Length: 329
Image (cartoon, rainbow, N blue to C red; front, side, top):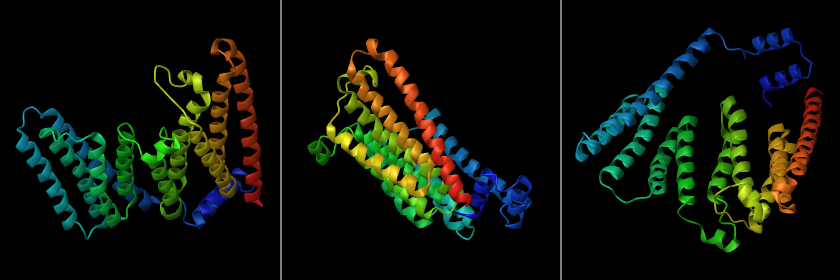
């Protein structure tokens, strides 16, 4: 645990007063001064500018798609990519500008692929576009070793695996009867979670990204498990959608929830514990939908859900206080 988080725990537990907390932040150099705010503002404006330019390029192609010839569209997209590459080369002595130029170039790779695919109707599926984009962006992410670029690559890879799930399945998952799970996507999110927790240098990345990825993992594995547990009542969870579930999905989900609960107690993470508890709550309610027709059991099911939710809240409060006492000791 870093110094700021330890001070925050002491302050939240009442072991450190407000004045003492402010003094400790100032003495340890953890409170941002005017110079730091100026640097942060400059970097934020640069980031917003790059994103605005990329969005403007996409909108320009969309607005003038019918007016521009096919060759002009492809040439303009490739010319913008070459310009971003030149900017990255000439700005290599300025780390911040160089990284954002590489970021813009990586984003324009996707624009080039989309323009060529639409202009010449290559017949490629959407997942192939995103997969090729992720493959071409990976070397630049490895080269830059910069979190925003890794986040861009992660989003593109997630889109590739999400769109791929709708068109294809892995044979091994079909054999196991667990093809409802997008296992490659869940493994990607798990790897991203581990990488952020281990290698992320920014405090916001270490503290913010792992819980978000854990939320995605829990939601992505819990929904198929709930469909499998609800069985004939699955239409209550996903109305008007043909769904099916298997026991292997439930087994994989139980394994993930058990691992996440173990990590919650090991890392003293209330977020992970809450995710596991609420996932179990939803899964149990899905299982109970098999007791009868929803019209007959909806009141009892709602009452049980509220009582169980209150119990989860009390459990989380108990462990939160216990971990705070351990930190303050």
